[in-house]
Length: 411
Image (cartoon, rainbow, N blue to C red; front, top):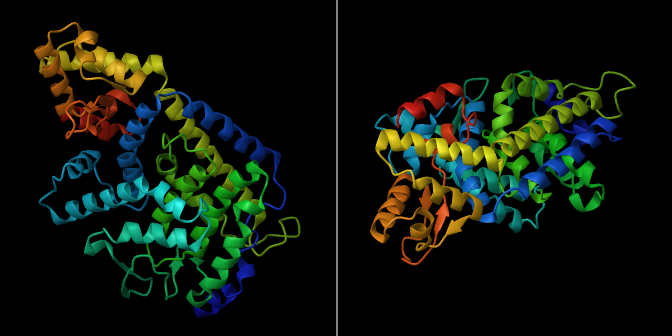
């Protein structure tokens, strides 16, 4: 291994950082992302959009951790969000890991602001890693090397030992600072005036960070959080209405194959001028942008107003039968979806119910998690809210089919 590692002490070994010329296919994909994200961003009231962004974070956590082999049931994540933890120590650790990812994802705007909206910096990657690892249970803060040595993963600290990931031997630990400086300069957004090229660079940087493997462990989670942040920095995250994790997990085999393929060295004189294969980097970017388009498309479809209102109507109808809810609940849920929030006194007008009955209905929806409000302010309006428990009914396909059946059966 030491002989191989020496090949990767020169930062030039990571070249090319991006395609030397932007192929028409990648440019078209990037343009489609711009247009699709704009449509998605403008499809909802901002308050409703924030509620759905909050609702999606547990799903992002579920899928990002799933790629790492940690299958935490969405119901367990939902319980953890209510401070209900499994008596089984392993399951409890998985719950805490999910909460850590949710917390970091929620902090992306703050962490981006701290680096002047430039996610291509060592400080940003270290901040992501530190924020994730500082909340992990002890058993997830250790890793075992290929040689069998057990090492502690220090939050936000670059690795000081050599690592092998599959067949790929990452650059020497003592050379990491030089590689990082090259990456920071190579992806600097202010130096690239072509927005479409910057979008393609998100995919390229995703791979090159994986190739660099800057941390002892947790690199996959950091890469995916970085990618969501990079799309946000370009104004393409539609307010948090989509992310990469679900799409990458649903194409996990292809994702890992594409990552491994882009590790390859240059094949011939027609394969760029760097150490690594430009052809395979282009192929990875094509895959990556395709996943982004697929996820934006999924959320655009599931949030289409007519379809969403139809599913809200169906959910209320089911709950009328199962829980003996009042059918007037639909009018409240319709209003908060379309308008983001409604005044408390508006519930009586929307439903045609008496003041007391309307208040009881609103409390029922609050208890179910389908409404939210400021508890400390009795005059605060009711806002849209979407709990995991109703994900299969309102956002079909968000979770794997088997998990959705479990969620439905738990009702």
